[in-house]
Amino acid sequence: MNKVNVHLEEITEHNWYEATQLRVSEEQLSLYPCPIVYWIAESKYATHFCLKAIYADEVMVGFLIYNLDPDDGEYWITTFMIDERFQRKGYAMQALTEFIHYFKNKYDTDKIKLGHRANNVAAANLYEMMGFHINGEIIGDEIVRCYSLK
Ligand SMILES: CC(C)(COP(=O)(O)OP(=O)(O)OC[C@H]1O[C@@H](n2cnc3c(N)ncnc32)[C@H](O)[C@@H]1OP(=O)(O)O)[C@@H](O)C(=O)NCCC(=O)NCCS
Image 1: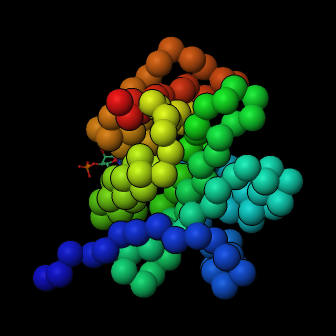
Image 2: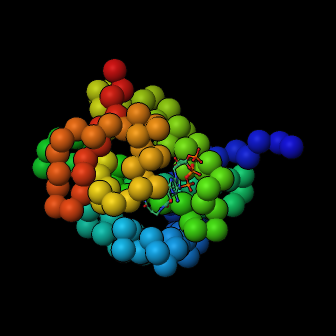
């Protein structure tokens, strides 16, 4: 069996609507409440947001935003999700690997950060395994993790 090609593409006028159809499960809504359409709307004003669709071969399976935060001067993965229909297939792991590769080639920086709710066990397991370690910061109801690029 051929390996699925998980890759990232820009959100454009051609795929933005499809991205709005991505969903997390009912149970995940308390951990990840904002629908994708919210993020796309915010990006109209937060123009430093970089939006990516995640594909497994030709199928859109998830969504990611990263940004250089103008307030702290640091790079953040702002949001990241895999649609409930495509979870537990290793796509998040592959998408993050792809993203880190892309990001390293594009930016000369030593780290990238992200936050997640403390009780988001799936995210905590995933990020820990991928080398995003807790750095002691807490922002609102989210714990912060940092991936070292150096
Ligand atoms: C977190 C999320 C991105 C994981 O996506 P995924 O494609 O299912 O993850 P993968 O299949 O690549 O799994 C990688 C690892 O993550 C962890 N993981 C994923 N889902 C998990 C779950 N439901 N429970 C516990 N650990 C889980 C496991 O350690 C897994 O490794 P394993 O399969 O060897 O056990 C997905 O559950 C999701 O989109 N959740 C809703 C949105 C969200 O919480 N985003 C992150 C916070 S901003």
